[in-house]
Length: 389
Ligand code: UDP
Image 1 (cartoon, rainbow, N blue to C red):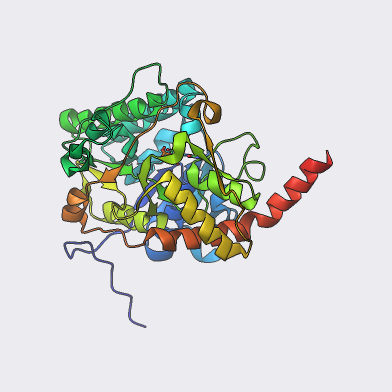
Image 2: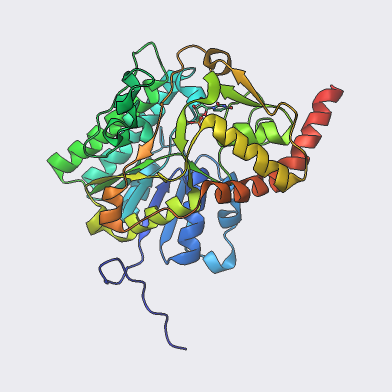
């Protein structure tokens, strides 16, 4: 049979198979990226993480058709001399490892700062010293609050895009005071972005920085008491899923008025593959990756998830599907919030031609179908055990 045509990049050049050192490959984003790279490319992945539950189907053991394509390296980048060897062996390093759940930012600010800044330093250093390309995962939280959030509530300028659209190379980073420890995460991420940018400017590091805007889908975070600690607080998709699975009201923090744009993980992963395969278009850039068309308030998200889950599970919604909680009750002291997150898509559009596709309703249907199938029985078992003891 004729050999399959070599895959092409956006400029029509063939894409050579790369070896990719993926740090944090066992997390939500890493697991989807590994699956995509295995299914649709010829790249080789050195998957680095402290656990592999979410990629067990790919690495433990690797299925025969993936032999030689993916290997798992269980190590903590904090203190393992094997890290530099793996980075040297690879053409490209992707760093996804970090604490990135808001419940930790104000309650474990030291771990948050160490994980997002200090632990990322050797990765940047090894890439720079060995002239290896780096794709570093940052966050939309580096933008902090919108300029408009400082205007009076009903001020007409709040409706003007210049007062809220977040642009990679133009918008300022606006954080709250130090006592609001929520911003420990954003601040650590901002400093590592600045360091990577400086390595590019002064030492020629080839880098790409990704700012995810609320990527969501199957395998995100954990369901407390099932595959994570029962007192743990994951991000909103998993919190609301957990409430729906347990038939508890969804908790709206401080009225649920904050706005978010949610993008389907599978759409976002396509943007990452474009970055991997088009270095000349991606190097030196910071990219927003989100879906500006999928904006809702947290209250609207709760409403939609309640409706979608009722369809998916066949269970009627509760009479009171939502309750209000204060942020100090829910997250503790030092919590603060980003008011609104609309990503500007100009740069990623121009450089990579990428656009998100999946409407919020569709991605919630897929995701809640997965949540129901994966967790319903386990949650039932856990609830009956808890009530027995
Ligand atoms: N939130 C909420 N109830 C929950 C969990 C989160 O109202 O059970 C809110 C939270 O205060 C924030 C938004 O949902 O305004 C998104 O929170 P998430 O943890 O997903 O991360 P963020 O987008 O803030 O990084």
